[in-house]
Length: 207
Image (cartoon, rainbow, N blue to C red; front, side, top):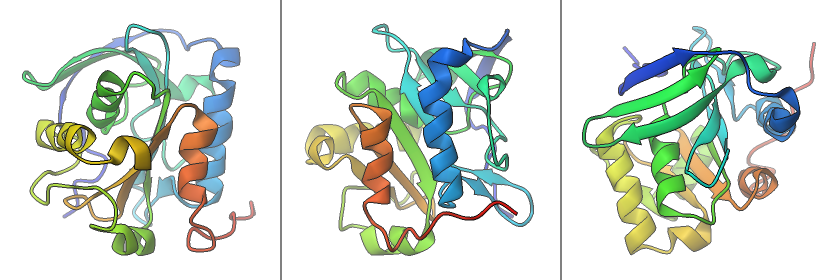
């Protein structure tokens, strides 16, 4: 049985009003683009996949799509959470907003912490591209599963010991289909994965 979407860190969630919609406009737009390409979405059983985030301030806080929002064709400011702090050793992550932060928030957090130049991070699922890129680009440890401190530490290792900071894309060997991209802004982070068209495919049409 898949544990996709299950939060593996100890979430310290403070339920709070949504962040200002205007500040989230870019995040909402690019998340919609990822959904249209099938890179964020849900499996037939309804389990969501994929998430997107953007740096909120210079203190390392960031906004990320909420847990269990992958299945939504469209999102608004009610579907995002502000990650305020995390502790890798204690496997805890604090967030506040209308929803709890995505199960992959710990992976996003260590990218922002390690790379001050990064302002946006995207996690998508695409099996064919995952198979093509496995070990062709920086690849996390096979024994590291999604959303765990082991995965976060494997990402940190790649950022410090490979050319990942230049490539801005990595594959998660222990998380089938999982791919991360990041960049100086949301457009760079999302277009990095879209640059693999036609493998990524045409956008889905709303019906």
